[in-house]
Length: 312
Image (cartoon, rainbow, N blue to C red; front, side, top):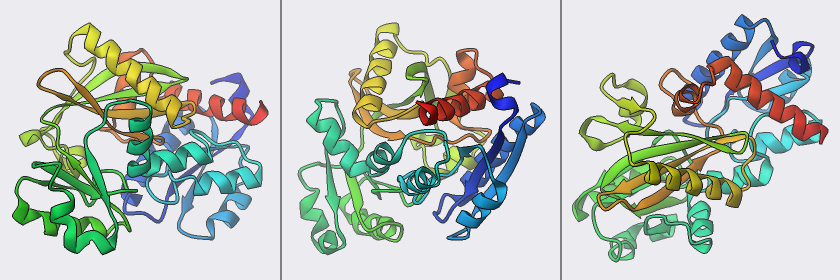
């Protein structure tokens, strides 16, 4: 048990209103159990709407661990509420959360900073009928996904023009904007950031080469290799790029940056997750463990970061 935390009541906020609620509940449960097993005073707070304000007041936490994913959890809104309430919380603040949550804004900022990211276009509902011509310059295959959702929900891989409209309709069922980007043939890699330092690179090897919701949360065939079996110079370059993304998007304490590495060794940033998953198959805990940081220590580190920011 960490001295600075032993007398603190820790509230773990989980659930939420997005399509990622199920993942959030799993992440939150893992955090709650780890803290309770370590002897901390911990209380689950389920976010199910405006009543979360009363639930937070009733719990009276000294520090909050955010285990929320998706809209109203990763987009700066709950962060703003906790700022108003004067409560320290884990992870990135309001602005960084809002920037990273919007994949289109993320990619525009990365492009401005010269950080490689796949070619893309952003579609509004009024663009749906003209989408084929708008994405023509990118070329197939494509990835189509909601611009402000995670966990690969609403995402499709499109290999031919005839399938584009259906993929766009699916994405619009989940969001008001849709991101269409070039699919980078190659390897799926990710780099976690903890306390401002990059963790070992993780490679994801998904069945059929597609890391979708099924492969991420339900498949027993998806493989995770950490440290990734890549050249040391490539690993160092990915870690450096991940830190650059973390800096540009105003990350704090911890995040996870996802990449595609093409067949010629070129790396492209996909996105940054400011509240990475903490489920049994999640990538940040795997990377932390490879660096010698066990799960409860990872959680403690995030909570200490929350207190340091609040007191600083």
